[in-house]
Amino acid sequence: MPQSSYESHAGKFIELRSVSSIGVETLQSWSDRLTSPARILDIGCGSGKPLGITLAGRGHLLFGIDCSATLAKLYEQTVPKSRVECANFLKSDCFHLKFDATIAIGVIFLLTSEQQQEMIRKIASCLAPKGHVLFTAPTQVHQWKDVITGSISTSLGREQYLKIGIESGLRLVDEYQDEGGNHYYAMLKC
Image (cartoon, rainbow, N blue to C red; front, side, top):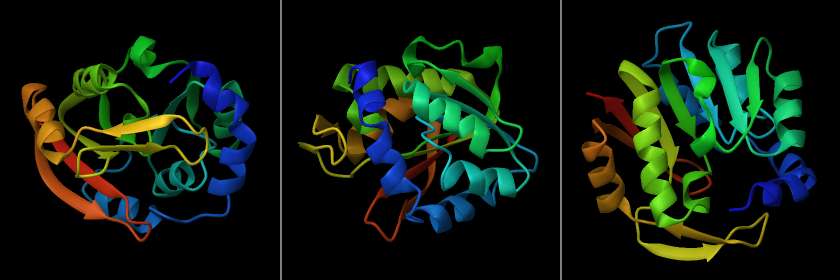
């Protein structure tokens, strides 16, 4: 997805996510496995509402990356003590840090198949040993129109996501389904 696409739709994203708590309970359940304060990389961090705020409220240290300057700036204002970079994750230096955990909620399927594979490999490389990953993507292989941008989204399917994870040094530890029907993969760096 072009970097400018989410910037041009930032207002709509802010409007939709600032009134939605979808995924918060799932994120809280997943984050129970983290030792506080965990250093968490939030990929496609958006405005920080509601997920960044939830994790910061649990005492974690948040580092956000978003390709929208508007959303990155808002995340920095919304999530206390966060560090934020306006960048394409695939081109980011990820703050030159290793992370205890990484989340990519509502992001990976916006990329091409090749970029999704690259993203999972890069996520694994950004993690400290025994680091945790949580990302969303449908279990079935299919395409659809993104609600916000109108761009085509692509799911590689559960089997492929698990295969790429294993090849990247990750193993599946859990899966979740939230109240909005979103599927979550929780992985751990081996």
